[in-house]
Amino acid sequence: MTGADSGAGRAAGAHERVRRSYDAVAAEYRARIGDELAGKPLDRALLGALVEEAGAGAVIADLGCGPGHIAGWLAGRQRRVVGVDLSPAMVAIGSDRHPEAEFREGDLLRLPARDGEFGAAVALYSLIHLAPDELSPALAEIRRVLRPGAPLLVAFHIGTEVRNLTEWWGHPVDVDFHYLEPTAVTGALREAGFRIEAELERAPYPHEAATRRAYLLARRED
Image (cartoon, rainbow, N blue to C red; front, top):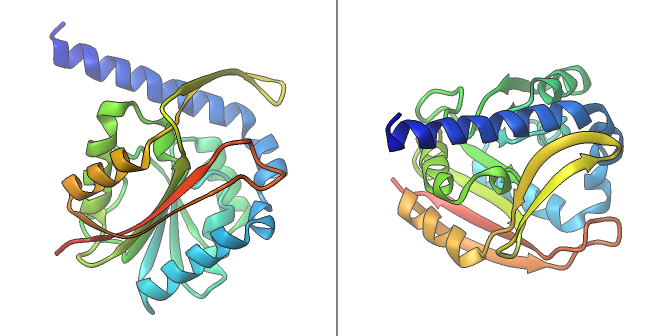
């Protein structure tokens, strides 16, 4: 086996572990997290800004959509929305709970979308499941499915650590959470062909895990 084959195999195995882990907690995740935007005023404001930036008629992608709560919120603003998630259980829940949006099963490294299909995208806490060497390829893939000038909103936990969960809400799992430094993500975005338009950080809300969070609003260059 060549080094490239070995690396691809490790990546596939890691993604399969993420898929199985989210399948295992999908129903509990929906019950606990599905209404979280009601308690996140800053997130709602940033998503609202993205809707305005996208403009009428734009299709918005929710990448790493989980149970579809953000896709549903966006669709409620009279926008066409496509949610994409690695977990088929999450896709099934999203399709059932939010029929006003479309849902597709897919990987951030191989998005199930045409070149330039979307007029905007959000990736909230989905980049955190990528290995460090997958960040740039994933952002390049996101750029591929965005039309020129389209905005992208990403969010992630700030830091340099990797946390592995083997138990989540009483379910056995095996999933890594990669905390990210904002400078690393802004650099990868620029390298992938995005212009950074806004950066901000916030402390956690009382009901959230105790991590600082970063938000980056970027735009695909022509």
